[in-house]
Image 1 (cartoon, one colour):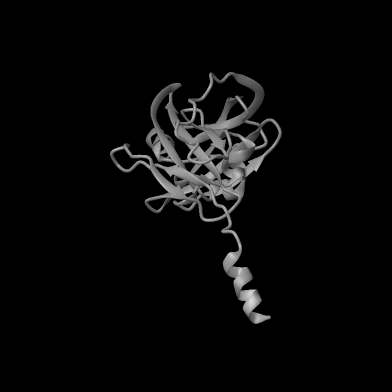
Image 2: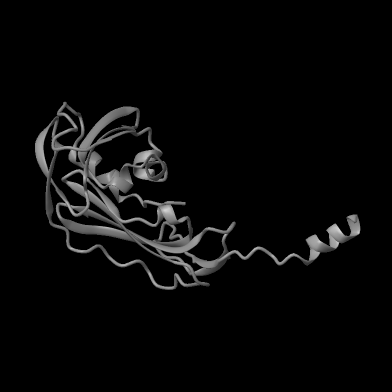
Length: 209
């Protein structure tokens, strides 16, 4: 009986796991696609693009490829007015199918929702949300020991706790995230944020794994 069980285990087909290209850019911004076996079933092959804007102009973008769980294959943005970061993605479920980069963000237009944003030391300025930004966001980050408040618009996906935890520009420097639905629900308050502090965190590469 035990012998049959052992033979049964040995002869069981190996659980199939997908192979995907992995490419995580370093400081230089360049990387090489490398085939990688996903850790378990349920993963997709994913390509992500993170595009950062300042003053309405693109300032940088990064492309990432890897095995990715379906819930992280999202499109969304976080918008603080002076700086905006947009995430686009492309996921697939066949062997090494993520050989192309994720598409760039489509042109975004105001969607009618309005939130407060911070301008200098006050957070009473109206920000017109764009694209699928359906939440208002308020976050306090700690930079060099000083707490800084940032307010604006965000997509539902960006407001997810699981997603925020993976965002270096928000999750790794002591960020406190609050998202809400409804115009101006991120009530106004004062802040000590300057232009540089608002722009710099959003230049960081946003990763989901």
